[in-house]
Image (cartoon, rainbow, N blue to C red):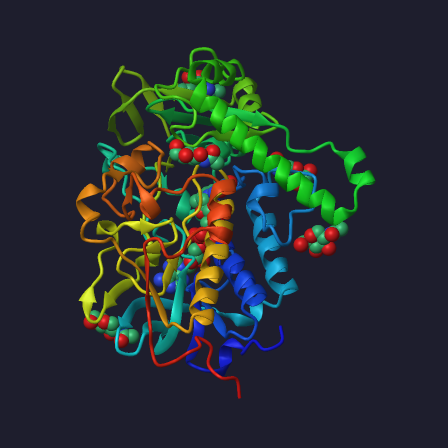
Length: 491
Ligand SMILES: Cc1cc2nc3c(=O)[nH]c(=O)nc-3n(C[C@H](O)[C@H](O)[C@H](O)COP(=O)(O)OP(=O)(O)OC[C@H]3O[C@@H](n4cnc5c(N)ncnc54)[C@H](O)[C@@H]3O)c2cc1C
Ligand SMILES: *[C@@H]1O[C@H](CO)[C@@H](O)[C@H](O)[C@H]1NC(C)=O
Ligand SMILES: *[C@@H]1O[C@H](CO)[C@@H](O)[C@H](O)[C@H]1NC(C)=O
Ligand SMILES: *[C@@H]1O[C@H](CO)[C@@H](O)[C@H](O)[C@H]1NC(C)=O
Ligand SMILES: *[C@@H]1O[C@H](CO)[C@@H](O)[C@H](O)[C@H]1NC(C)=O
Ligand SMILES: *[C@@H]1O[C@H](CO)[C@@H](O)[C@H](O)[C@H]1NC(C)=O
């Protein structure tokens, strides 16, 4: 890309993006596209890009969303299967980064540990561990594309007696490459997307796989192919892909609204596709709805090699699990698919003029920036639609904020709750899902409120409208400073 300083050229960048997952790559595209001439770097702790799709390696790892909406808007998924496996998604992210020369701006093995904002300089200073060597980088604007969970540590599930177990205990986040489950008895604890993916994939080789769930989950079987051959012949390729994406966005939204408006009809519909004795104790979409491609989950149950057991654990023993109803589950391997350890901002310690900044006590401005934190944006996607649709709204909002700083000759933007408004704000959950690991975990997400720019994210159509046309002055304060332009003068 012309005008883009390569990441190697220095220690200061107009914009620094932390994380080379799908959100980081998407943000980088928008910076290049909307702010030509800006220097930027992506700092990535790992050795490769892809984030989630690089980290997770369990058998069958795949998306839960359709790739038409999960993929990049600017480089749409062009295959006919809506569900893709992990390696294909990583490959797609890599090819996209290469196609737009975003890969040249990624610094791998760069872990950011702290970021300090100086009001005097209107600049961020970042402490970075660059492959073992400490480095300080500076920037005007930070974008956190760091996802929502801890990469280094799995959630420690509270399972009574787990220490007694003499077989192997595996967490899906750290799947041993050489794990031999052939002819072994496997118990998967959990009922989320990971458990539902693992069950049919392990059942092929294992002696027996049991998914042990505390409470049932809604699972929707979706065909892993689209059949729009007529449309794809009639329309030019680019238009066809854009239309495909638009259709899937509406499909997700309509299904979500239907579930919210008619919880019992939709519960009935979803249960029809499932075993009649499964009765989730919540309405569809109160927790993330799980999908399975071509009914693989149900086919595996019918084959007799896999089962689902709904009960709670009394204790884990040397050789298996004793349930509260009295049953014993024998196991050689226990897989704890019980959730992730939530984390915002990739564990980066933030300070403003030397004072610690506590993310969970701050309100989020339009789902993009944090109250009292200058020039920093956080890519937090949707949980009841493809994550990346939310990431797209965030990226478009960020570029408009930076353009506004440029055009008004300002140096910083800071969300601010006015003193007279503070007592009026009623707290609302930032993420709507009621999954146990989100409800019971310690507070990590920022706050959302019932009004104004502090409302939680809504849906793609509305959030994109705000990102492109909304009133940025509502809740944002701007700082004047000596430098008129964010961008450094290119030599
Ligand atoms: C198994 C699994 C399946 C999923 N399936 C779906 C799905 O089908 N649909 C959906 O919408 N969502 C899904 N999600 C949620 C998923 O994580 C997001 O959709 C999406 O991949 C997140 O992308 P991201 O770029 O925001 O974050 P991530 O993919 O988590 O990437 C964050 C990156 O930031 C880097 N990083 C973090 N902290 C630092 C630091 N301090 N310094 C430097 N680098 C740092 C990490 O190394 C990582 O590369 C799934 C999640 C999991 C775990
Ligand atoms: C489809 O996308 C892939 C990955 O982005 C790319 O390599 C390929 O050329 C594309 N094919 C078509 C027909 O556009
Ligand atoms: C979906 O279909 C594609 C293309 O046929 C295939 O490669 C992929 O493995 C399928 N995914 C799943 C999870 O079944
Ligand atoms: C940021 O501040 C913290 C705490 O004051 C300090 O430990 C860290 O080294 C600082 N980082 C940089 C890059 O200055
Ligand atoms: C698998 O395990 C379940 C639960 O322990 C048991 O009911 C079932 O009979 C087992 N099936 C086989 C084939 O071992
Ligand atoms: C997600 O949930 C929120 C809160 O319930 C809702 O306002 C929003 O419309 C939902 N998003 C989608 C894409 O349906």
